[in-house]
Image (cartoon, rainbow, N blue to C red; front, side, top):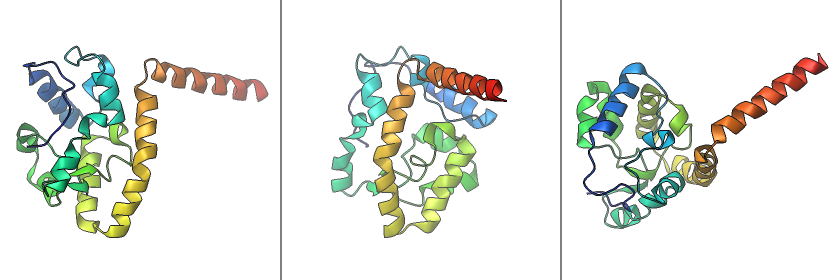
Length: 172
């Protein structure tokens, strides 16, 4: 059992998440969370806890009990694991971690296949040096994730890109 702070309402249905994940796997789209679409199942303040990763802070107890590592592939649900192809199950050849290679290399911008490949790369290349590198990159990755999940963040990024494009066109 993996510990987390509750960010979802009690007794909400899980089929929405399962369908979302199936779509991401089959369409090979970036691994966006339902949070970004304003998931109504999330409690007040839950979005911030999830964006900052604070909802996973209790997993430090899992680490202390030896059930998780500080670094490793993020744990998946049994339902998710059942949908993995045989070669993708290699991802669980390392203990699950609080942070991992996927989290610091694009997390919500990578596809399911890219996530699996990053996690398998980690399982085949585990080392103290790689773990330290991942841990050092975790805080900047979390900060970037918080900025990206702020309301209107994608609109600001698009507006900045548009302004930059217009400036470049006017200079040409």
